[in-house]
Amino acid sequence: MPRTLAHAPIMILNGPNLNLLGQRQPEIYGSDTLADVEALCVKAAAAHGGTVDFRQSNHEGELVDWIHEARLNHCGIVINPAAYSHTSVAVLDALNACDGLPVVEVHISNIHQREPFRHHSYVSQRADGVVAGCGVQGYVFGVERIAALAGAGSARA
Image (cartoon, rainbow, N blue to C red; front, side, top):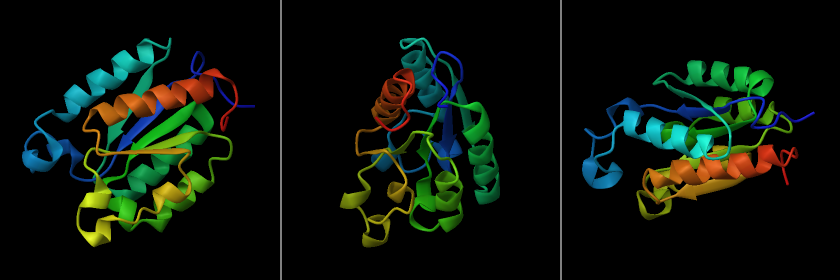
């Protein structure tokens, strides 16, 4: 049975180099820090009566472990897999093991307007929604979509 936003937090996962948000390539990613993004997500979830579990790792295996945790304890996943979008079958396989759990993929930049190797995302194959090119506001859109899916009690409405 799907968990609802009222009973379980949204897992928000951030991949490699996002700990440097606000410092690394601000012309692409903007000046907001990861702490700023977390505050936006907390506010967006609270507006729907929910909470978030916000994490970042530069290590693929740790992200996989957190996805496994989310399948048991969370109502959905918002994930910015960063560079792992384009390379990680392991992250895709972990997400595929989360039957019924809604997933929204977020990218701060529009990956389709960048280098050709960034145009493909393994994660998109599993995601119920993809937000790209909306800056850090994309995380808010991701939280709102998970809230709609988890609040409805149907993971893939």
